[in-house]
Length: 113
Length: 116
Image 1 (cartoon, each protein chain N blue to C red):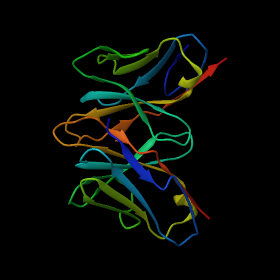
Image 2 (cartoon, each protein chain N blue to C red):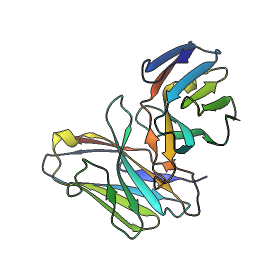
Image 3 (cartoon, rainbow over the protein chains, first blue to last red):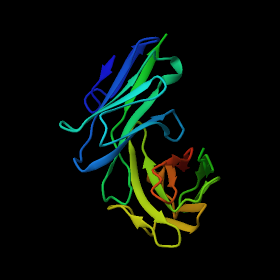
């Protein structure tokens, strides 16, 4: 399953399928990006990050892709599990921003049994 | 790994009273802490940035006299919501980063404030 962040704030996928969550960031001067997972009633949890000098980074079951040309970031989750159900936010840090994170609008991922 | 402890996790207070929320970095020195507010099904909105030993920098539209932030030590920042009203009810979250170019933003678990 795939989402386009601002226009499709919810994404439902079958357990075991791959998920793709998209994010369009706003500032071309941003040089660092982070994906966070937030479960209901909890603070954001770091998933993976990427610097602007890279276009891909892989973690355990997750991959982040960065396309600076179109200011697009995506999070791919392999073999989605019920525990992956949460809201996912991308965040950017514009260079010279006193290291302040700017969060995207978020995507609610629901994993169906 | 870096841990940020935020307390209380939930608080209910009466209109007109003040509430203090604490944010502590447990295993690192947090030179900078950030306070966010989050409405249901919405993203995190930065309220203010605080550096240890100096006054907080508030984002546009955030009342500094209503949301008092103190960052008196490298491990503790507090947010006090003064004269709380029902519209202040929200989920408040802190995050902290260390010194030396460490981009390891660590978030607290959040505080659910309900003003009745």
